[in-house]
Image 1 (cartoon, rainbow, N blue to C red):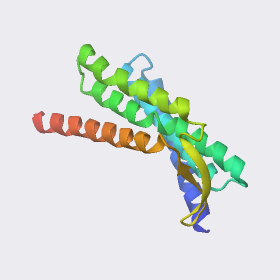
Image 2 (image 1 turned 90 degrees about the vertical axis):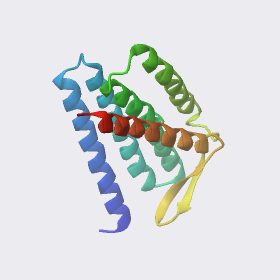
Image 3 (image 1 turned 60 degrees about the horizontal axis):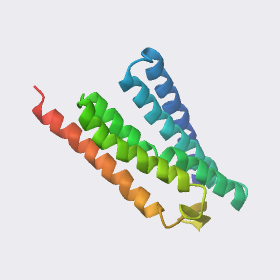
Length: 166
């Protein structure tokens, strides 16, 4: 089994596992916000992983680019759903929740809107040991920065809550 096949297999297993995990959590209590947000977070990871796997082994540039765009519809929502999950888990007041989440959802929607254009992903080309690898467009670095800021902020909130917990 070559490295591209192993990469694809790992991403497909990730996609199936996170999809099933999200469905399981939602079905346990679909009315609970925490469950719904965790399910959406899991499904966005599932979309990313299946798209990433198929993008990297696509038969031609057009298919690879299509799967790259598809995968990034999941990617742009991962940080917002993660942060929404953390804020819901920590039971932030609705006023504070909205102040944080409205801009995050706005940015995710913006990045989803420019995804599918050269402004987000300029193209695909061979890189490293992969047949196709994305070439970032103008807005892509801002999306990566947004991703890391949301994840770092969410982890900081969790760490602070952990240190204060009895």
